[in-house]
Length: 427
Image 1 (tube, rainbow, N blue to C red):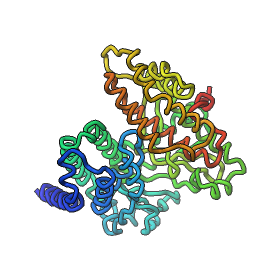
Image 2 (image 1 turned 90 degrees about the vertical axis):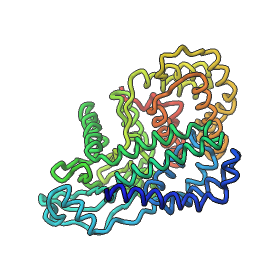
Image 3 (image 1 turned 60 degrees about the vertical axis):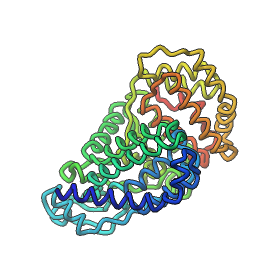
Image 4 (image 1 turned 60 degrees about the horizontal axis):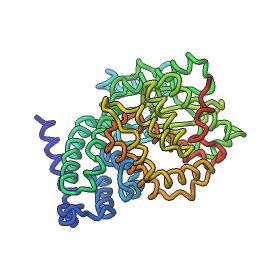
């Protein structure tokens, strides 16, 4: 009953925030012609007022230019993960509930000042009774109920926006929000995350890959809501100053990271789907450290082959090859009219090829993000209108590849992921 009451209060509070922020735009929204930049600004302000779930949603929007309108992507770049730390009292309570003993009975020492405090969890440094140097990832109290309540409200809000604003309906926002809901709820299961870490570790051991490591999971100190792992010391791979303190060859480090990531994808179908700068480290011993496996992807050989065709087509400006790749990845059984698909793709291919040439030459600064967003929207719409249903993992892969492509340019602009991805796949 108390949970129902809390959910009701949360919905009332959230509704009040959204009403206050968007009230001045009500007429434009209901008329079906809302000023997207103004709506994005007010939503971002509401997200920051409401905290954890909504901040994460803002970050999801900011990281998905192929899905959301440019105005939203630009505005949500400002949506920082400014989540207040959980009190040490709550941290102790969670550890007692999950591990059966007080924090100081479980660990030899436990740093009460968090290393990081984010939307889903908070991370503390600790030393185990055996003297192991670890990090303890502790889920925020009540986060699952909060996420469920917030996501239900977000889905209702999305339905309202799509009903009254055609631009939102054409973006397929409801489907994207449902995808976000699935991803964020997966992140609350630390048993699943531990299994993801060990799956990647088993792959590294199986192929004899000793250039990369993942943190060891300590199951005796872990549960669904507490995850204790080996602590890594190193530098984010995009921190050039920190990187050069561990290696004289940043390009080699980047190439190693690419080889490991692409090879795991090609050989096992399993991949880390959130390798942003903070989740990829150069360690003191020179090895690459992959951390934070809350979001992973798994693809079939068919999707992998389709992705390779798609990327080759993008690289060489071949609409036929792009179409072949998309059709191969399609999960429907409907017969696709390839000629129509190629014709529709050609309508945006001149601009698309221009962008790919800039990426391949390392001229990232010359890319117009607004143009790129529009083209990716067009491709998404083309696949849907041609009856294609592309798997969720394809979006995760493209997002990750673009992640890599953008940040390697600062350290090794000669690396070309789009054109030369096959050379990073170990034989």
